[in-house]
Length: 71
Length: 248
Image (tube, rainbow over all chains, first blue to last red; front, side, top):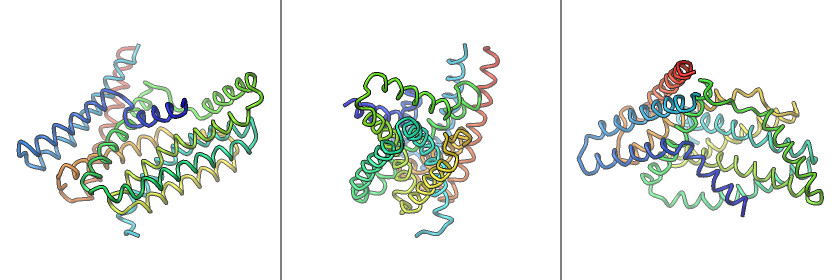
């Protein structure tokens, strides 16, 4: 049972290394998908939102962690 | 077998990502073998590999039944989460914000943990050692399986990706048998940085395709994505270093 719990924790940890980054990435994907499907956004613009949004989220997450972990 | 130019990114991504995971599993198996002998280590490893084989055999046919766009979207999202997580951690390690992964320290900690168990439950030592090896192989192996599926499925590249992962296993085992100590000289953070870049690029590409986006220049767009993620990782690391110096 303990091993199963550990295994599940490890599997979730594989994808959710940092909770807020994961939530932000999922939100970005949902927003991009909605804009493409419901607002008729041009697919290249959708691609740009997905790509540059991901890059910005990465930068923000690294900088936030650096600030938070610095004593 | 697809042409090498198509298969190369999948092979290299699976190879380097698996290298990191196999080194981690090897460190723990070696700690078990050093303390309790090769029998429980080998049995635990075989057990872990057996469970992994079952997972692959069960998952393989299921993957074929999922529509390609759904598969690309699901795997793209998971890859993006996985890759960006690695890239974030590698950037923070490179900036000195979080400590480097130290195989020697992990080896020492795992050995000490097993010694502690030795004092408490001397009758079931080989069992504990075997389960420790099994857990390490299973947990790290699951990550390898995911990486192989993620970079290989949906494009008919499962075989090349598996070959990349197998080559990583063979390399680590050969090096491990030769040096017979934790492989602490593997530049793990550099590998994690590189693999994080590649997996994030694959993640954006496949998530986009799953959402119905047709990327200009098709597969070549991956190179641009990888370059952008590399740049973002390096800039993030430089910013993080600067921030930590400012606040220190």
